[in-house]
Amino acid sequence: MSKTVELARHLETLHINNMYKSDFYWTWDKTDDEIDAIFTVADALRDLRERNKSTKIFNSGLGISLFRDNSTRTRFSFASACNLLGLEEQVLDEKKSQIAHGETVRETANMVSFMADVIGIRDDMYIHQGHEYQKTFMDALEDGYQLFWEKKIQPLFLAHRVESEARMRYYFAYAKSGFVTILRMWLEGGCRESPRELAGIIHKMLPTR
Image 1: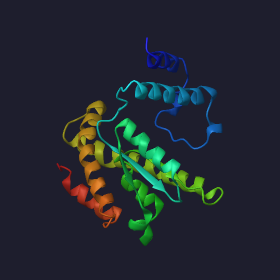
Image 2: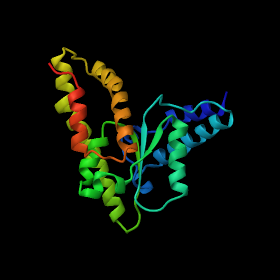
Image 3: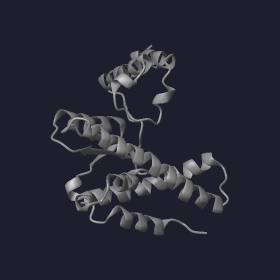
């Protein structure tokens, strides 16, 4: 039995359901089982890597890094983690985006809410402000995704007589790959269009009744 299989079986004994689709702010907010799970997954990834086994769980997707202060180890660790899991890292440079022109954090977060699989934020220049920024950003991500799903995606599918939510998710995953490509072009192009303008471009691509 491989070490990874043993670790996976141990993982099944832990109570970690609350970690699914949640953000990671502080270690002291986590239970003992959740901390145990983090180290267990890390050990499993190390074992797979050492045995030259693929650790990719994504065939495509974006990992967006937003580092608001200088970083070396954390920046490269995040990029390495994205690569390890099969994601392509995209750097969101605030100086090259509409944020520099007065766009709010919430507007930017809403724009990327349905395109990114993971977002890594580093902001610890000032005590407490970094946490507030991350909290605002991640709350906006969740709100933006839910609003987009409920107001745009679900009604669109229902109009085309797709009533199964499971099937909606599959169709949306297919469409999302196109959104990811658009977002990548937007980031690589220096975010010349505002999020509102980009949203308008994407909206015109969506099928109508």
